Image (tube, rainbow, N blue to C red; front, side, top):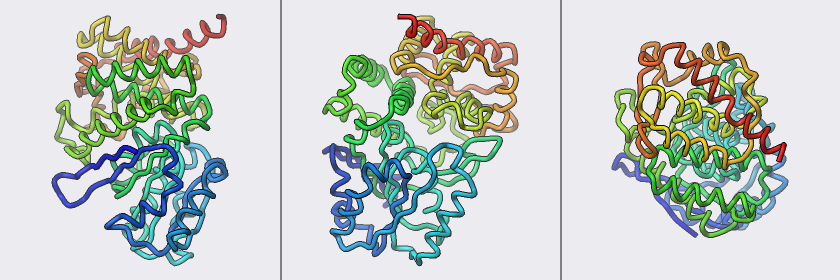
Amino acid sequence: MKRLQISLNGRKRFSDIKIGPGIRRDTGRFIADSKILTPRRVLLLSNKRVARLYGAEVKASLKTEGLKVFEWLMPEGERYKSFRELERAVSFLGKEGFERNDLVVALGGGVVGDLAGFASSIYLRGIPLVQMPTTLLSQIDSSVGGKTGINLPFGKNMVGSFYQPPLVLIDTETLATLPRRELVAGCCEMVKQSLVANRRLFNSTIKSLKQLKDDPGFVRSSEFESLIAANCSFKGAIVANDERESMRRIDAKSRKILNFGHTTAHALESITSYRVFRHGEAVGYGMLVAGELSKNLGMLGSAGLESLRAAVQLCGPLPRADTLDINKIIGALQHDKKSVAGQINWVLLDDIGSPRIVSGKTINRKLLQQALRIGLQQSGRQKDKASNE
């Protein structure tokens, strides 16, 4: 088992991250061993599919430590990160009499983690949270760093909070039951991390993606576990230095760099009502568009762009996006939550491992339309090619 700890701005707050196969069966012990978690009751917040796979083991582990366990299951899908489901979750906590020292355990992917985290942050002005991510994307990204939120009809994660979980339990065994699309989505997010991190993490990611392509069982290997840990470590270092994503910071260590590929991704998800793309799939397209912009602005060289494209292709096929209305996408971009003074802050690349935050003032509509047109065609071509082989 690997262990990481994120210390937050030198204060006496931290997130303890444990990574290993089968650790869900020791959930109760990890909570009991914690110095700051002292619950009497635990709400296991999940969805039906994940609860059916892992819920019984987690509940048994919690009950072994004498904890009273409740279960609340939300519908599955990004569109259920909504005010309606949030209200249902906090109402359940209130109805069952949860107190401020009790605990919410989020067992599932990013949707479960985001909604559970937000509910935990606002119920009684905050009760403790444990994240137990079960998808690759949530294990390397959304469970780490404390961002929580729900969507609005015109934009993703427009309402939310920063709320750090004192404990994150990453059970790598859960990756073996992931649907193919969820694994592709997670691999895209992994590529994103590596592109803004450094050449070493990028090369390790490419090597692992090639091994995963040849052997799906590679997700259960110690090498893949180490790659997950490396991703968590990189993101943890960024978060520790810029926990709340300061609006004033535009340097290469700002938390904003983690939004690489997300500006276009959120627009794609929004205009399709969160029904077409997994989040990571949309990020895959977002990276292709950001790569085109980077090259056309004279930042990223041709070799770097080809490396980016090849990395996204290694992740696997994405749903087609070249039939979407580019003008609708551009319209949705205006609701990006990272906008400042009406301008979008784009995260682009000077090179692999060298992100730069660029004001939207430097990107005219024609340049953006061109980048969207080319970027959104890439994976569609790759998918057609794969189907003909």
